Length: 154
Image (cartoon, rainbow, N blue to C red; front, side, top):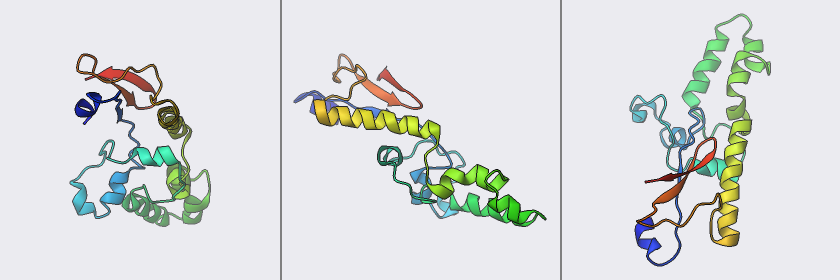
């Protein structure tokens, strides 16, 4: 698409490569464990950047409900089940806090900041910032977004 569009106007593209396995659209799209094809670390899923772009706190929606339930059941097998499940510093709450609350971690907030800056720059100035030049066949550059933004060529 960028090839055709670049013939008519300055064009940019980015690759969202940030992967946070506990939170991914992959889990929402594949709630049935049999459809996950045995993947435990699917990597970045199509649409994952929307979680970081809009920073909407949606508890559990992006998370693997089966893994959360299995950890909760594991807590129930111990004498200190109530503490395991309810204490903020307990195993369950500390592991699943971000999924249970929908909050973004510090690292995720940094990724969110990169996306918001890029999209805002594009809306205001017609270019995403980060000193990227428009894509061309001679200079096929793009912004790769992970825990930081880097300029790559393809």
